[in-house]
Length: 283
Image (tube, rainbow, N blue to C red; front, top):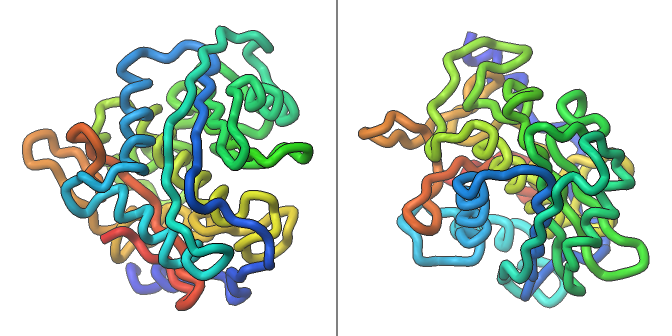
């Protein structure tokens, strides 16, 4: 049974390749827009993850080592080959200025309100009572760019009350597919744990394919990218319904695969290695 399920996990035969466009290298300033109501504890989980992307002072395996995978697999081979240096530069709170039902076009409007810097990323995060077009049905987040400037944006929603089985798996029972027991979240907030996973997925996609002509596989308007090419893959031996071999906190029973800043533990996605066409988890 397990071997047959593993056979289903092979990546598409079409290779994930470089299409000669820009990637994000060197300094990457990140501006965060909190849309809706977020508890201080929720903000702390996500801000510590952003700090983890920048800091190398972490126990191993670490989020910063996951960043090294992005560099080694992708960024070191193109452009100036500079390592990415993530820096949190701005935070903006928005108390539902556009209501609680948003279109994709409004996400880009909110990204501009985050005041992103040139070459940077606006990170738009929506609270668990905000609906966004196609959220839960086909996506848990997205990334894009401003056609008139040199900044990009990422949107990720909190799925806790809308679709945790879709956007916060493996910390919630899956909506479809094999049904296993959900894992315990390392930071105690399933919605934010899902957000961290999807921020990681979108961050890897943004830095390697910021303007739609970098690294991707398949059609340009519906690409598979660095992490989206490996859905649900977090540890060695992963297959549909099983996240793979992960670390477990002996005190709390929580599962994770990366240490982060300020003593945090996180789950980060596997990435497609374009040299081998295989999904490579952090550990």
